[in-house]
Length: 294
Image 1: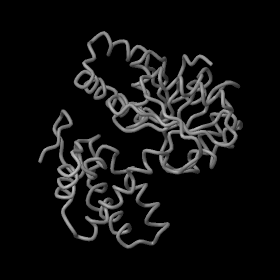
Image 2: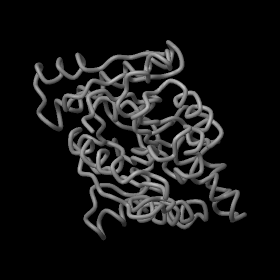
Image 3: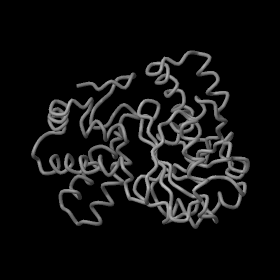
């Protein structure tokens, strides 16, 4: 199947990146969100992404102009999905919301449209039926900062048509990604199965008063040679996403340190507008170029 038209549902941090990355690599993209305020916020994200592509990829004026020419914004769901060859959903990590969105998409999309979710913590089979066709439904999971960390994990359900998986793998390459097929449904895919335990360990060290977050990051960077530590990684992911993931852990395990960390994130960061690198304020402060201010 040739994919010419992509619709991305949700223009938050990662939704905007997915849309911009595909448009940069020549795909026609509709970026959908619920209202004009959300679209205006997305426009600001796209403008910042253009700066990042210039800085990190050496994109010139012609490439950026072509990207924006490929990119359309809309708050009309039916018009956004009716001609799409693939729809990638990147709405907040709430299963009821995802089911609601996919029920609507299933009514408006073409009969051969591929349905992909970017869920980080849920299994696609938990809400695939809402789309009306589980044979076209799978997960397409991106890392943050996808223009440089350009891995995408493709994870089918037991019902997904193998041809749909193959088309999605090919589309991943088309949009400048390195696609990896996850052979069976697994919560957390490969990426989060490796990363999340590190983030949980770091959060426990902080919540238990073992060390300050700056020193935890310093130890990790110096011991492993990694470019950033777990708390800067949380800033990159976004502290609202970190809060959502750790809240699930806290509720399911009744672990007091997880609960303490969730409360800390809310009270000391989210309630103060410190959402992470997106706004240049999270655990760390960042300059206008995204460099950490120590």
